[in-house]
Amino acid sequence: MNKTSDYASAGVDTERGALFLANLVSWVSKTAEFRPGTGRSVMDIGYFASVLEIGQGLGLALTTDGVGTKILVAELAGKYDTIGIDCVAMNVNDLICVGAEPIGMVDYLAVQDTDPEIATQLGKGLYDGAREAEICIPGGELAQLRDMIRGVGENSGIDLAGAAFGLVPVAEVNVGRAVQPGDVVIGLRSSGLHSNGYSLARKVLLEDAGLELDQVLPTLGRPLGEILLAPTHIYVKEWKALKHSRVTLRAILNITGDGLLNMARIDAPIGFMIDHLPEPQGIFHEIQERGQIPVEEMYTVFNMGVGFCFVVPEDEVRDALNILARFPMEAMVIGHAVADQEKKIQIPGVHLMGRSGRFWKL
Image (tube, rainbow, N blue to C red; front, side, top):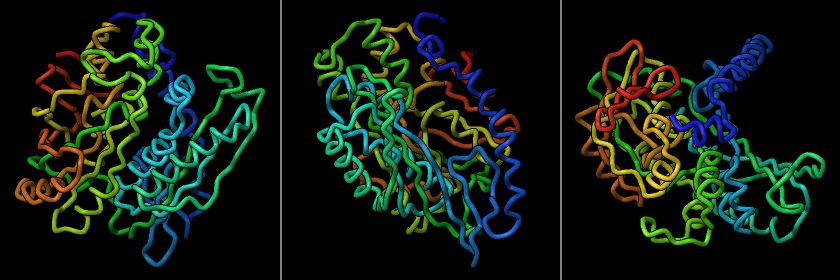
């Protein structure tokens, strides 16, 4: 592995981060005892979203996420009108994984300086994301943190995060418990990097390779900055179309940080054989080749072209694909579920096996 360009050297130590998270969760999980009745959690911490029982058979689904270091690309480009979409997407795409219909989101914006033009662009992005997700943004928080927030230019630093909420009948909370061997995985194309892996992407492309955001690389056909700032696709409408059909959704999976390893989150003794992956978009090839990133690192960090998955019974695949054909992101069968207590994710086409939070070369 080239230690000058892997995720840890780019500033993200996933192993140390896992220990950090485990120590935090060990205390946070104890708070369940404070709400033994209404308001209790109906699931363990660690799935895509959390659900609290609020009475009359209803659950309140909650999730929180931010845009991450993709913001630094927006600062370099002086273009902030897409990262608001990312903020909405990173939250609502997690929310629908438990079967909850998104209702709204609140945002948290920390800034080094209060530039009205930046606020206008951020607000437009949040509006566009909310429209696509069919949610409202009833409020949020603005914090002026000049001594804490730093950006790539003078007074340019910002951080943007959100927390989304939705409703789901408690009896319909979906954590993948119903997945059975032979069920089929339908993958939907990603719109690019989404909002994951930008520490590595920036280090390889902008720092080490010295590329400029306005460069048009022959393999990409568009300016690099335009591709890096392509907003995360919001999959709410696709999910709603399937939810209101006769298709049985055994599991709903957002392919975010950790890539296809997210499939191992389901609460069933199931692994997945992913044997029909589409060709990743050109941006992934540029990162891999310019940074000499091993394939196992790429698939551990990035979505590699698949942004969202639905697991459905084999005899319902055709109906699901017919419904998903109405939407812009290509949908395709990428694999199937297999019985596996270790919950391995196997990708034979690139000779990888995923287990315990990372992919390994076979």
